[in-house]
Amino acid sequence: MFRNFKVVSRVVFGRGCFNQLDDIVLENRKEAGSCMVFLVDDVFKNSVLERRLPLQKHDMLLWINVDNEPTTAYVDQLTRRIRSHVEVDSKQVAGGVIGIGGGSAMDLAKAVAIMLTNPGSAADYQGWDLVQHPAVYHMGVPTLSGTGAEVSRTTVLIGPQKKLGINSDYTVFDQIVLDPDLISGAPGSQRFYTGMDCYIHCIESLNGRFINMFSRSYGEKALALCREVFLNGGPDEDDKLMMASYFGGMSISYSQVGICHALSYGLSFVLGIHHGIGNCIAFDRLEKYYPEGVREFREMLERNRIQLPRKVVADLDEKRLEKMIDVSLILEPLWQNALGSDWKKKMPREKIKDIYRQM
Ligand SMILES: NC(=O)c1ccc[n+]([C@@H]2O[C@H](COP(=O)([O-])OP(=O)(O)OC[C@H]3O[C@@H](n4cnc5c(N)ncnc54)[C@H](O)[C@@H]3O)[C@@H](O)[C@H]2O)c1
Ligand SMILES: [Fe+2]
Image (cartoon, rainbow, N blue to C red; front, side):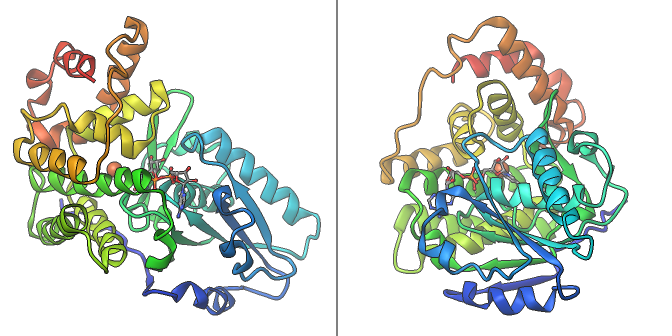
């Protein structure tokens, strides 16, 4: 069976295109009095960006905090707040959700847009194609590039038992606004770690069993752009990184990521390590599986003067290490992509433990 997957319906790209937000939102305001919810990373509180938000009378601005990666409980809490705000005036409708920030903020926007039209908790929908009702209109505005969250059909959440996405056609954004100016102020190390998420997407996609010409075409271009950004730099690097993230996301949407991502999910769940940095810590230990990629990654680390955290797992107690392994093993398609259908034989728990212990 070939996957018949949904893509983002509308894309605007270019330096300064954030100025068109008002017009784009206006077209999608269903009726007078409908409420647009702006979910914005609180790193932008009191910034120039705050003053540029095209808020109207009935709109709601919710500052979101992403010091910890998004949880299902946080999504439920935000959804309740929006519902109670909207119910104050019964004429109001939550007309849409606009997520502004890095991968975490965009994922929260996608998840909240789904939960505004679906019953229960976000945790009920972690998995594949469990969402029953279409989400409200939702838009993503990245302020970091690399995760590919702007184009993916998933919103990655930490639930009570696992870190797993809500994978659904309804998750995909209706609109994305790609303005390279918005990523230019990000701190260097964060920019690097999120950018490496994209680099690793490409390596895992291109070296996986699920590769096909669709994914290869996007993956190769994204990889070339990552090389330009992290090995050479230059004047257009924000534009390049933004498009690398988009292309890398498109590449994995029709293939899959691999071992590094499976291990990184375990690091996030047990130790709260953010996705980008977790990927870097894991990837550095995967020379055996991705030799060329890891060699080049180390060159990028050096050129960008990044010191990876060491000994994050080495001294971890057995119980938490076992949980880490459990979480990584939930990601079956990732292992399958990297190692083939007999991956369980090739990668017993002990082997995973060995790799984790080196981190
Ligand atoms: N949905 C998907 O397809 C997908 C794919 C990969 C990762 N993810 C998720 O994305 C998240 C990681 O996203 P990320 O790497 O973009 O980082 P992030 O969104 O977690 O943000 C990292 C830090 O950077 C700050 N920040 C964001 N933009 C900034 C800017 N322009 N200037 C200064 N600071 C800024 C944030 O406040 C935060 O402190 C994880 O939760 C991960 O699970 C999702
Ligand atoms: Fe990723």
